[in-house]
Each structure stands twice: as C-alpha cells, then as structure tokens.
Image 1 (spheres, rainbow, N blue to C red):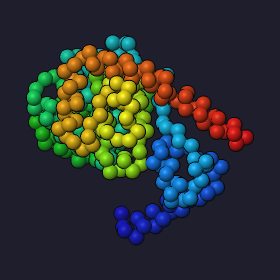
Image 2 (cartoon, rainbow, N blue to C red):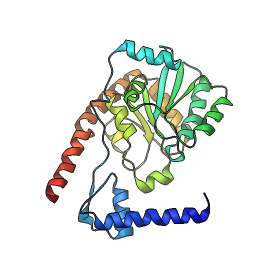
Image 3 (cartoon, rainbow, N blue to C red):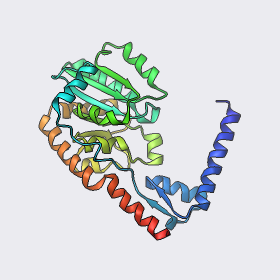
Image 4 (cartoon, one colour):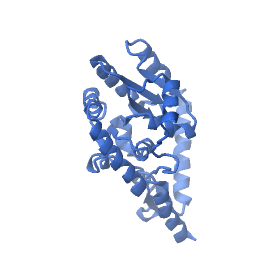
Length: 266
C-alpha cells in the first residue's frame, strides 16, 4: 500500500477508536493489554473498561463420538486411521506462527512415523506456506484445507489428536491473547500446544496442554513429540481441557458478565 494512503488509513482508524472510546458508556475488552491501550492512548477511565475474554460455543464444539462420521472426514482428507493428526485452525497470517509450525513439522516428519498436519483456514501467507511445503519432501503430510464452513470445524478438530496455537511474541505480547482456537480445541477434548504468551498461562497451570517459547522451532517440535508419544497424557489433558472449557470458557459464562454490564447501564 502507498505510504501516504497507509498514513491516512492509520489516522482514520485511530480517530474511530478515539471517538468510540469517548462516546461509549462502557467498553468490553477481550484482553487486559487492549484495555491498557485504550486507557493510555485515549485517556479512558479505568472504571469504563471491563475485561471479558473470548469464549467457545460448547454446544457446537464438543467431542464427536460418531466414528463413521470422523472416518469419513479422514478419508476425504487422505488421512489413514493409523496416522496421528496435529491441527491448526485460524488465519494464515504472520502473527499466528504457522511458518514456525511447518518448520517443526519438517523436523518431526524427518524422524518418521505416521503423522499428518492439518492446517485449517485461509490468509495472506497461504500461498507462501503452501509453496514451502510443496518444495519439501513432506507435501503429502501437510494438508491445507483452505476456508472451511464454521459448522465443519468441530469435525475437523475432532479428527485431530493435538490442537496447536504457535503465536509469535511481537504482536501477541502487545495485544494479549484470548484465542478462540484454544478454547475450541479444549471444548472438543483435545490437548493444546501453544506459545508462552500472557493470557495462556492456564494451559500449563490447569494441565490441559504444554506451552513453548514463541518462535522456537525446536521447543515446539519437542512439545509435540512429547504428546505424540504419550497417548495417556493426551487423553488426560483432553479431559481436563473439556471440563475447563465448559466450566470457565463457555460463551454462556461470558454472556452472564456482559448481561450484568447491560443491566447496570439500563
């Protein structure tokens, strides 16, 4: 984009943020970092901002027990029953760290074993990421689904053994994270491997997965290998994640908090 147009766009975005902050009665922020940004840059009073993270629709995202349905999905994607599956769901943008995941995938696949990586979503890096895979020796082991209907994502997560969220540090440490994908993996009963970013501490604290250093290919590889070789750990973490998603991270629990704010304004 032309630098002049980019400057105008940035100005308009900041102006819109300033106006929205000024004239709102209350603001709901999904992370403490975004709340701090509003207070520091637009002098928003602290009592005007409430931090309520994202949640998950636990009615749509849940363990699927229909083995025939899951086998059908695997067949469509070229995954055989004996293969373990690692899934990523999300926008294929730089800050998601999918390039780091692919490098870790190459390292794991070079060891051998029956393993597939399922990359669900679209985005600006898709062509470059696919080109990288096609030029490798593992093009059959990394599957790009492209954009998928929301109603099909629970099934795709359910055919996976591990859900991964390899966020990079630069953008995510600044904005904080409240990632839908992590809560969706958990609600489907899958263990999570994610970057050690503020907001994701609960993953290790609650025993629902493992955290890795952002942008550390080897560390991500080791964490994935650890879970791939320990089925009991995957099962236990998945069960804990399912319980936690239902008890703490459902949209129902978020709605109660938002409803309270609306009643205070009425």
